[in-house]
Image (cartoon, rainbow, N blue to C red; front, side, top):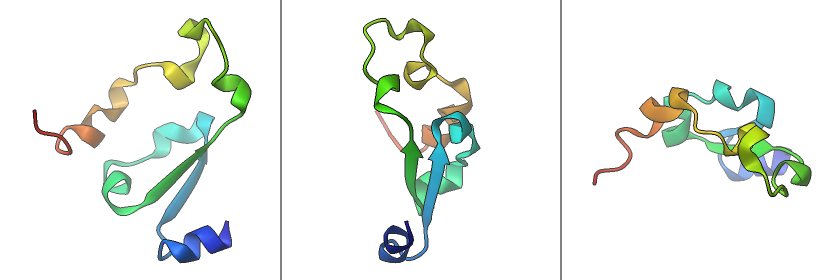
Length: 69
């Protein structure tokens, strides 16, 4: 972790998947964000019960100015 943080000029934010909503809009522009989870959270056929695949309205402001269509 320390080497990763040093490589990215101390601008790394590491979060557990359950704390992912702590990512702020300015983090998207200014930090390298690492979200930690288990492979079991990704390897499922029925994704309806997995929050990792869920749409999260709270992230809309994070990306609204990032992309222009």
